[in-house]
Length: 188
Image (cartoon, rainbow, N blue to C red; front, side, top):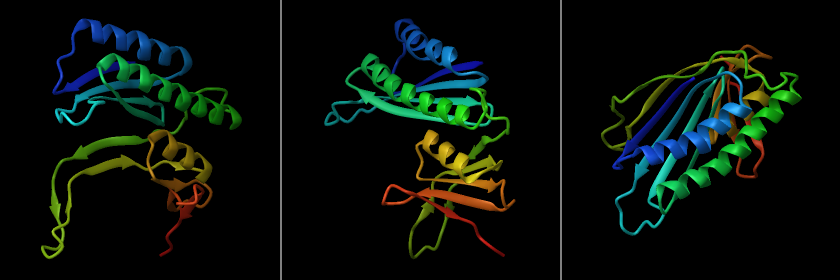
């Protein structure tokens, strides 16, 4: 497993790195199989009006799934402790879904997830002055809609694009305002 710690506007010493390894890496390795990469990003918000200015983002790349959690604290250690609780809940939910689908705790078999990001900015109509500030490229994988909802929840997103394994068509699941989910399947 690849383990990466990054920081922005913050100097990380060995004490912090050791704490992250003990509180996050070691715990995740005990409960999840087939982790490809574990990435921890620290960011320090310089705005003095923000009390919880130490932000942490943890991303776990497994064989086909991505689990992501973000939190903040008044110091780095508090941020780690807070995000740890979120990760525990997400990993537990992920494992329960896998087990309920008969996968016995193994990570998903299909490959997928983010492949690359393109920082190019594309301008829309000059009149609207809207710009695309981030472009992501990812592999679409065939999964049933219920599993796509799980992926969306694990990522913490409001929608998820996938290939519906039941129909073979590209589809989108999304979270509705009434807390239910919607499925969009275009026809040509």
